[in-house]
Each structure stands twice: as C-alpha cells, then as structure tokens.
Length: 234
Image (cartoon, rainbow, N blue to C red; front, side):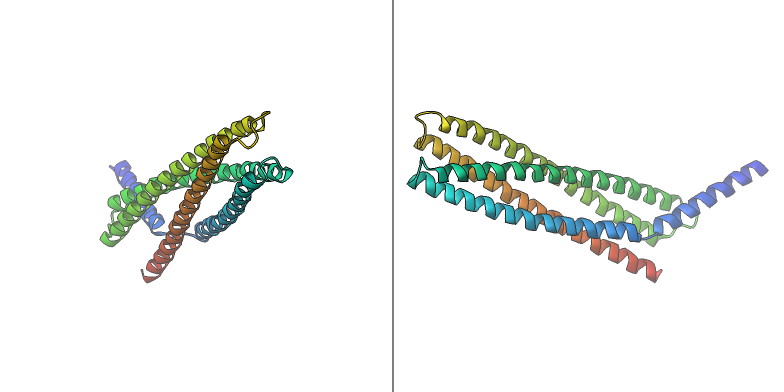
C-alpha cells in the first residue's frame, strides 16, 4: 500500500512540474531565434530583388546586342556575365532551399512539443481549463506553421530544380550557338530569350516566397509577444 502511495506522489509531482513547464512562455533564446529568422529572411528578399534587377539588366543588354551586333565581343562579354550571374544565383537558391527544409524540421519539433504540452495539461491533477485552451490554440498555430513551412520548402525545392534545368538548357544552347555558322541564328536566340525569361520568372517566384516567409516570421514574433503578455497576467 505504501508503495502505491509513493507511486502516486511521484506521478503527481511529475505532472505538476510538466504543467508548469508547459506554461513557460518563449525564452530569450527562442525570441532571439525568431527575430534572427525574420531579419535573415527580410535581408534575403532584398538581396534577391537586387539580383533579379541585375540579371534583368544584363538580359536587356544581351537582347539589344544580339539584334544590333550579333557577332561582337560585347555580346560575348554580356553572355559570360549572364552565365556568371546564373552560377552565383544557383548557389544562393540552393542555400535558401536548405534553409526552408531546416525551418520545416524546426516546425515539426514545435508541433511535437505542443502536442506533448496539451497531453500534459489534460493529465494535470490541478487541471486549468484556460491553460488547456491556450495549449490547444498553440498546437493549432504550430500545426498551421508546419503546414506552411512544408509547403514553402517544397516550393523552394521546385524552384531550385527548375532553375538548374533551365541553366543546363542555356549552357547547351549557348554551345550550339557558338558552333561555326550558328552565330546570329534567330531561332536559337529566341529559344535562349525564352529560357532567360523563364529564369527571371522563377526568380520572381522566389522573391514572393521570401516575402511570405518574412510575413510568417513576423507572425511568430507577434505570437511570442502575446504569450509573454499572457504569462505576466497569470
């Protein structure tokens, strides 16, 4: 009988401490991480816009030169600049796709923690209905964040893969254009222009994705602030 009493005391102690833990609002480290994510994403959007403008300007110059000076050294120089820009952009896009995956993994962990907090609150011997409602709300928010992050990661991966494909097609096309007797070929140049325009479109999609991620990061910061305020009122 004494053994059973001690078991219940230990269980009650665990559940009470777990409930207290579940009520702890985001700490300084988590808040700092959310702010850093927002700053990084916002800076990334600014960089992407600058990169898009630079590539767009190069393509405009290329389009003008291919019509007015199809065999000129100036055209070749611009083509080299475009390919250098594409190589650099692909590296950045690859980094951003990896970051999107990391964010999805982080959101998965947050959903797991939120689900555990709800379970603990339900089992708490001193059950507080408001606390349970708060934990359920947090779980809903975390699930929505996870859904958005998984969607964003998939979109970032799709953009990266298509950019790689377009780049390979452009390289192959450029080799064909550089072959003897192909300089100034209108059909090949039109294919080249179409691919370059698609690459620009993909970069624009990437910017929109970054804007949406920045909005989600800002929402995380607001939720952190709300939880701190609610904790002070308890």
